[in-house]
Image 1 (cartoon, helix red, strand yellow):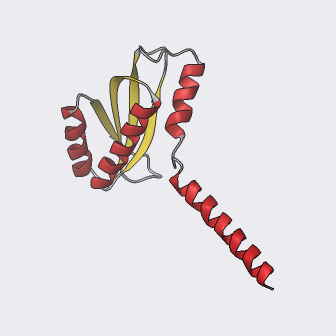
Image 2 (tube, rainbow, N blue to C red):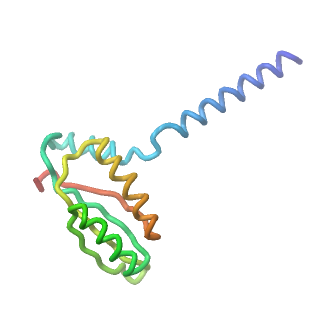
Image 3 (tube, rainbow, N blue to C red):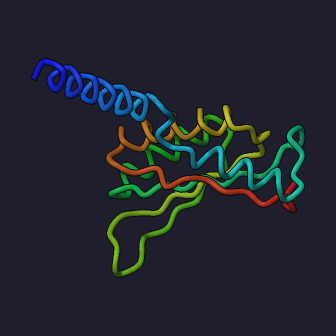
Length: 132
């Protein structure tokens, strides 16, 4: 009986360790995949590219406030209303940047927090290596 209890505790400890590792692993490897795909298509790590960032915001006021913040950091922005099937405003921001995993992960974290401040959502980024 004691051996069964020990085996159960060992199994439980292993499950706890696996769950903790999964939680501490980077949650969003979207940035790493995007950069990897960009490099695989021949993009140079030292060349700045035009990077497009996308946000969804609930209303014109929050969109205007977010645009001001982004434009003060050198981003070019434009916005438009969503289609009839979705509410809110779509905000697009672009800037020439060197694209690396750590830089893009930093932008992702920053923009998720910024969008949340204005009641919105950060939808991600993209670039095209032909737009240097």
